[in-house]
Length: 432
Ligand SMILES: Cc1ncc(COP(=O)(O)O)c(C=O)c1O
Image 1 (cartoon, rainbow, N blue to C red):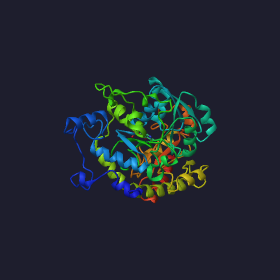
Image 2 (cartoon, helix red, strand yellow):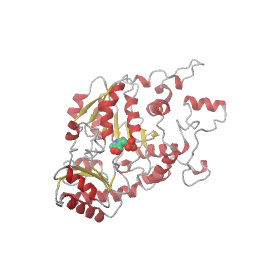
Image 3 (cartoon, protein in one colour):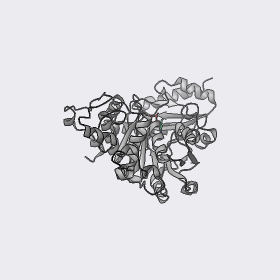
Image 4 (tube, rainbow, N blue to C red):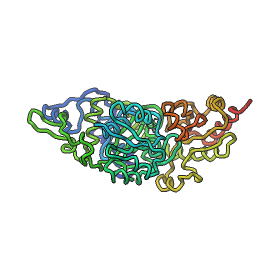
């Protein structure tokens, strides 16, 4: 089962093991029969992957994890309750004993806030770079204490793309992993592991789920990073939860799980401790959404391009940010990395001031004023006041998030209705 379209419908699921149900059943059970003392011990120590308590693993969520791991080309995944749980788990798991994460300033707002002002309370610091594709700038920021480079494959809301292969190469030369938030393109448009990324995270709330009906996140492990290179003792120190204290047998995550050390630790320590669990019903909704990801993304990308091209010539629009446009400064990189398109989000700068932005937001009829992306319905938002509110002004401005920037997430409606709606709302925003 190697084709993306086969995997998105079948991967990780066997009807014969699930009452022959065609659809993945929703296993709404907090706990599971461990059957024998021996099996219970194997499950509790993590020696065997299976089901005993839904805070650690659940059969419905398990299918989602296996399916997403395959779609991204990883060896394993842990599904969590939101994209921010996935980002937090991945970053804290690599920098657990303290350290620095290098990231660009144009990340999603809550990720910037976590790195800039919250994670430092836990000894995890950040060093922001303005242009993540400037390898010299990134390399200067790396030092002994650096634990990872964290990027978004397509930035929110500028849609600038990151040269994952070049950054992965740089990170590996310094013995650190590259962690990629691949939320915006989804694995249908881009698969960072194929370009050398070590860990991929998603807000599955967005294009993966696709219907704006379920929060979720996932951490996916490529299984290629060497966690025993001396920089990450949390993976090589003996760990009680996977050892047998009574028998005097002590093991580390690397000894016990080898290539799977990272993703096993995320499950056994992070999911089990912080408990940001994906629930079976949301996992079911996300599996349902995934079944049509290719058709949705294709149509939404085509619609997004039409809207971006239309806005380039619209009155009162001073700039359009969509790296999928043929006149984008990133055109060559985009054509190389994103042959199926760069995504369903774009943004534009409106003339005038805050009152014009407010009037436009209040005038749309087909677009909905919603702080989300990747839904089948088209959405509009003012990032500076909503999604990037917690980003310090110095970073917002560097990332192009001005007070007059408007972000669109394009859905499956008819493109001409979307452009007509924007035209009338822009006209209304400048009517006396
Ligand atoms: C790129 C990116 N990463 C992470 C998140 C956080 O996802 P969630 O809202 O599911 O926690 C978002 C949310 O908008 C996002 O856009």
